[in-house]
Length: 445
Ligand SMILES: O=P(O)(O)OC[C@H]1O[C@H](O)[C@H](O)[C@@H](O)[C@@H]1O
Image (cartoon, rainbow, N blue to C red; front, side, top):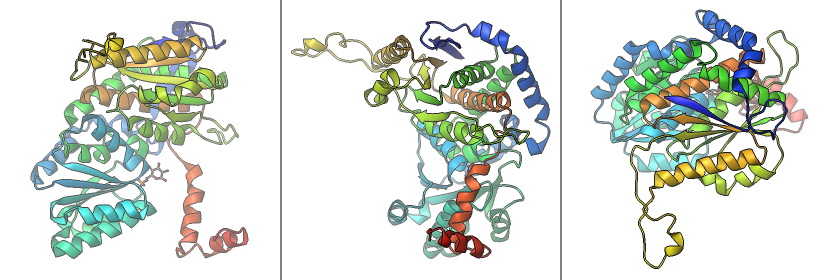
């Protein structure tokens, strides 16, 4: 079960206690129903990049992934080479549910020291390298692949090929033909699935299979989110959270904080930040009019950031909507023991850590509300594969709904292209000489 608890979310007057979600849904019923129907009807068109809706239905690919994992029981270290959507989902799932025995390493930057350190410490014979890139051309990922491929070949000769598995578009980019010509194992990223929406396809499932995540249930949870996203508005959780986000933005709350009360969910905010910011921060709407849509997603972890950011969240500018994520049941609990001589702490004696964690989350939500800081909590029955799959897919739906409400394309990212081209020019890539000269004249070289 995934459900919502609202705190101080009045759509008109921030600061007034209580938010009538039912009334807001009524007021915006037409818009939300149109958004829901548009998303479901456009799904069949690959150009709309809504392939992520159907991915959790694809149990055949999941079976292939599980067969590949079983056939490679020699793997002790799995290095994921990928960035953005090709890394953040697997990283979040692994931190939440990974239980070994394989150790996962993510190379999602080109800072030389951590890469050199990995190459020094890992044993090639026990290492599998999963290079993940939808486009098959991202500079960071390709640079890392060149280094790891050479490292494997230097140590293992021709056997390096058994130590690489490629996850990429079935047709586009240079990785696919390369995998084919070298006879490397390869999995597809469906063409209609963008990187930040790819966690339930092999981008997320292959690394997760190596750390024992219950993938059948992860996908079952994602399918549950699909059902919810098709429901009437009163039951349609992503339409509801999207509406809250939309109304908050309309009131000038330009920041959306995402704050799970869980260390195991510590990478979920990173995944959410890419999903939200890259999908929704757009200069133009679907008709090409300048809109500059979006709110800025900010990462936080409870309780940790109660001791770092909550001061600002309560007393700083009223420019934020805060989403807390809280578990209703722990997977394991621990009693806080009584200690003689420390009776000043007797309010903790005999209570459980989960009790304390829950009290802190509730206390923070209420303290924020009292300060007029709107927030809501997404409650997860527990942290297992089913509920995590549900939450991930819920957040993808929320993003898609917001894209519709703002009338923008949530599935492209034109704003990141120019930086890439400048990088190519600065790195001396063929065909970029003119741009390099232009940059030089502007003082960048
Ligand atoms: O999977 P790739 O094609 O290598 O892309 C990796 C990432 O880089 C790009 O710059 C995009 O902005 C991201 O949306 C994407 O997830």
